[in-house]
Image (cartoon, rainbow over all chains, first blue to last red; front, side):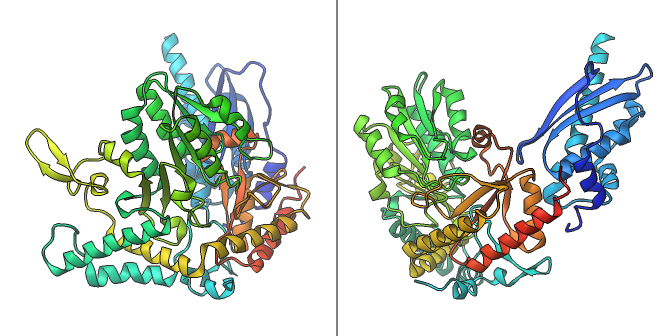
Length: 130
Length: 411
């Protein structure tokens, strides 16, 4: 993985999309990778029909985790929560333009892990309300 | 003094090319490479002598048993111990767990205190947390200074009638600090001779002469793979009287003298703590590794690593974006250097270094609480061994220049 630092990845790292915080998020989760010390806060705001209306994140981490999270937030905007459940690491690799080495899988998957946690949290609260 | 460039030729793996560059292996605190003599010893054991040990009557069983016990003698001699006090385990982690479960759960009770330090590896924190949870004991931590040195002036205030055990690392795997273990053991023992002192020597035994007699501790743990030996073999040394009083850690074959339907009489030391078929080939390989290191000389290895550290720190001072963790003085520093590259995550530093053939570690190095304390999310660690040269340091520096170049886009 010597070409991991492609311009597009570095661009997302340098100019992260959707970085920041929402004032009134519908869902907020924190996720981390213990082995590397990376962490992310992901916030979502949903529309009536359960689509991602707004998304913000704050990520402390490496180029891969930050760029993958940035790309992921772009990719999920406007999409339905139920569809996002199906997102996998393969989709992240697709966004990154290729797979990462074994040691960086957790980095690439950090944002995705947070997203899955967020969806789970949303569905849990929904089922409690119902 | 040995010539590291010649020593390098003893290690077949160091002839490899990585990403178009000769391998520069600087991840020795994680594990070390193996010289041909160790590879041969393990291979020869399996080609010529392999059998299960102890009870066999046939010749191979006898040879395997002898090889295993001779390895124990070599280890005992290496750390100035008695052979009965040398217990073979898988690694340092298992050795520390053995002490925690066997000695800890028997002797530590509600309200008792366990003293650790703020620079411990997870393997010297988690087992004690498990003991504390089971017994109701409390863990207290000896703090470090901003330089990453143990604040031994605080030890007196931590010691109390509740203190049952003091467990600490000899050399920090993140900061490189060499701790004054002998002085600490002395202070602890003069406060109360019944307090047990445990030393995690994973990062010291491979790199400097270590004598358990001299340190004055009760238990000492290290791994074979960090000193040119195979993975899966490690050592727990313990004082005979303590080991004799302790219940077994694991039960099964080889650790018994007689078994009845309802009770068991245990074998003598050290077999009492070696249930099941052991890693005989591992012990044989460890023995070959120790003899190899002894021939070169632990004192010289230590001096060589110090010189490399001096050279590296000097070169790193040209990088204003690099912050080195740990002591600034070389005096109490081992041959490892962890650092933070400003605005570049440790994984990214390590990945760029890999692209020029340099193998280093990045992350928290199994020291999450320490990294939190240092307010650093992750660090990059360069760690030396006998086969490293100044040219390896130069290659790291080339790699760090590349890091600068790749990430210059950064805001």
